[in-house]
Image (cartoon, rainbow, N blue to C red; front, top):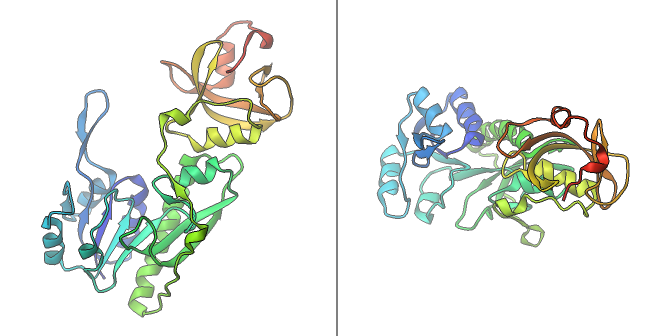
Length: 307
């Protein structure tokens, strides 16, 4: 099939690779413009562009899709289907309606749950036991189009949003190949979303980082997992900012924020306790909690407190 692929971050790369490996003709890739990154603000191409160029596919990086230029490019490319995976731009109706087989989106949730920008992180933050990916026809709404296929997966009790992201990207790549084959076969079945069951996964912000240890251990654990690796959960330890990257649910109780033991590093919550296994003091690299404690030299648990 002649396909135009639209995507930007690492999440979209497995889908593009799967479509290439499935012997589809990828006639063009649309992705976001290169952006400055790092301390030197080096202009860096998005992962999808890198993959496209490695496979000798023409890349287009319009700043807008609304001025008609992108539409003219698409008409010239003449795709039979447009596949969109984490592109990051709203598609105008004239682009959505352009192709024979439609505009197909892979979204990283079991729609209609978690429409929006951060579905993977919010599934973890909310303590969901399962999630998945949904293939859907795009429409002018935000993740509101008719659903085509889904693929479900369990969320591990200690799985981080980053780890789940990587697994869902693979599930999405498997799903899009099935959708393309079904489109050709004429066997795709549309299912309307039940808007009453929808919820919105808003963008993450740095303001979400601060841990409130008066919450339950499970809520704190979910926060640490869901904000890994950005913006990362954090707390003050004796007045100094610490990013907390990994935790486990632990036994114990005490005043919220009280350090119950040093080996392992266990902290009391409003209900239960968490064991901190990986952290990052301000200005330093990530390290195991035990390495951090060893560096404090003969400190006692009662001398430490998180808040």
